[in-house]
Length: 113
Image 1: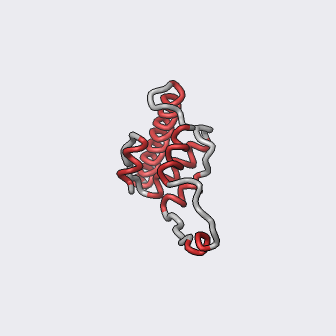
Image 2: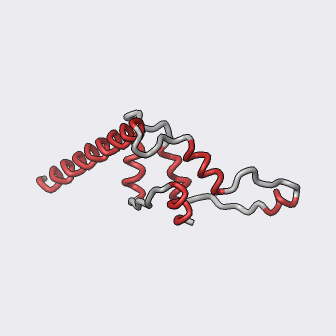
């Protein structure tokens, strides 16, 4: 559950409309802040859940638990407060401000028409 993710990561949930999350992810990728494709967010917006009953019946078993996979991922990320993390945070905040300013300008122009 979400509370487990928040506890393991030490981070809080940030809920955004899908359109805002996707456009921000696109900007961050264009700026080179992240290599992740914005389309990866689709898996978070509408996760694919399938049963693995047939796989287990055939002898398969998972190598990772959800928790161990999350912890392995977090181990590859810069520590919060590190210089690299701070750089990414600053770049992300800058991109968000620039994007918001562009949206505000566009809205003002449309109202002025």
